[in-house]
Every structure is written in structure tokens, then in C-alpha cells.
Length: 74
Image 1 (spheres, helix red, strand yellow):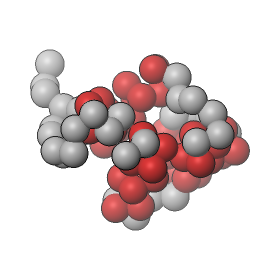
Image 2: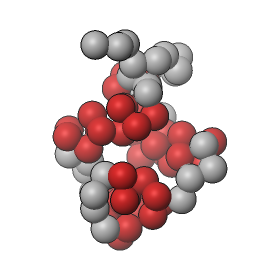
Image 3: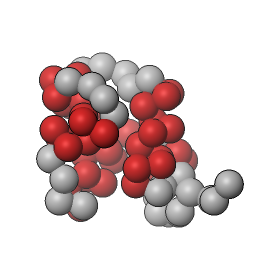
């Protein structure tokens, strides 16, 4: 699964809007929408923030694994 589809699925499972996630990432709605649609590649710093926001591992968000594992506490 492409990570763009994965971040959309995660967001929808949590009943969040694209605007809410964009606000958390401190970006415009249109920029985040392009990430979910696959039009633009997401920067690593935004992926890290999504991991923290959703409390998920980067491997899951990036589609490397299908096991929804929690991000370890530091």
C-alpha cells in the first residue's frame, strides 16, 4: 500500500479532517491534500510528526509493514 493511501486511511479511521491534520502539521490544507492524493512527496519531518500525532511507527505509516504497531516511548 502506498503511504498516501495509508495516511488517508489512518486519518479517516480517527474521524479527522484533512484540515485538522494540516493544522497539526502547521501547513495549508492544500499541501496536505496533495500528500494524501499522492501528488506530492511528504517530507521526512512531516512523517515524523504524523508518527507522533497518531502514535504509530513510521514502518506502518510508510506501508513497510501492515502491523499497526505503537511508536515506542523514548
